Image (cartoon, rainbow, N blue to C red; front, side):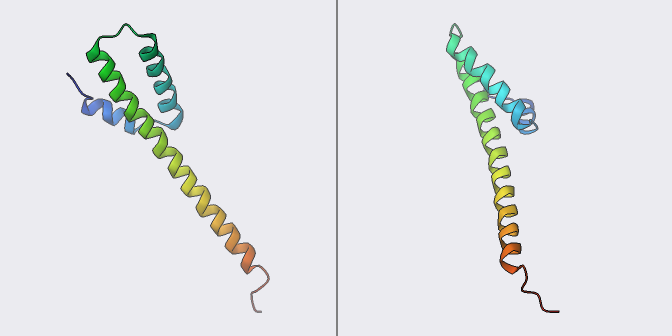
Length: 85
């Protein structure tokens, strides 16, 4: 059975969240429709797993950025008006 190629891995790694989500949706539909050989099903499953991991990674990056922005904002609020002239 064939696994993902290096080219496919690189393509997934370069995808935006929306691209990964849309590709994952298409793969899920193919798998749900059925009629695929076991080898094709496994291949689509592997690609789907990679797409899901990519999307999750991008979401985590955004969450981290939002958390950092909230911390900076909260820190700014806590220190507002405490500067000495």
